Image (cartoon, rainbow, N blue to C red; front, top):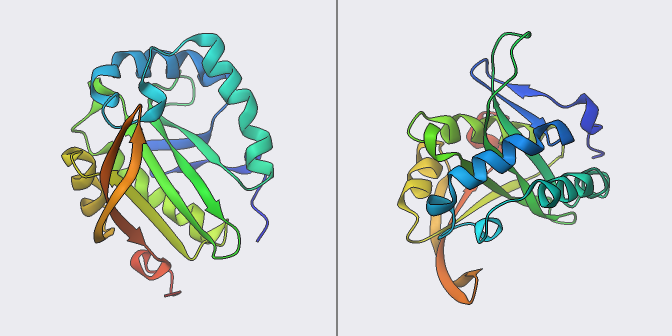
Length: 195
């Protein structure tokens, strides 16, 4: 299935909105990552050093080509608000490790520290998963979480993902290999009829 053009994608539940990353989000990403470094560093490979505006802009500029090739789908998580207000960047999410033959992908998410505990990550998972199943034609979505990341494990379970098991030596952060817990979603979990 051919994905929609990035310009055609806007996912919202009225509380949060997911937009494919754009250059206008760069300053928000820098602020959100740097505010959250202490909490993100143990679990996210991109947060091992402070974010810089040139680095984030370079990353954002790479995203359209990756989307077009079906390799990576990166979204900004924004606060849904009035049309005349500048939306607050709450975090990021997306799909990576997209497997075109088996039609599965890894779902990733993070929320800035000042907005943790508001249910944002739990809200974004069904929005993003629905896009993956309907628009990308995925059969399976995996959520791989470091075994020690208890907050993210709770999010996956609250969002209805099925815990499948422990994977040894699954995540490399810096020079440290970590165990991870695999969770999954399939279309039937969202009531989409495909098992």
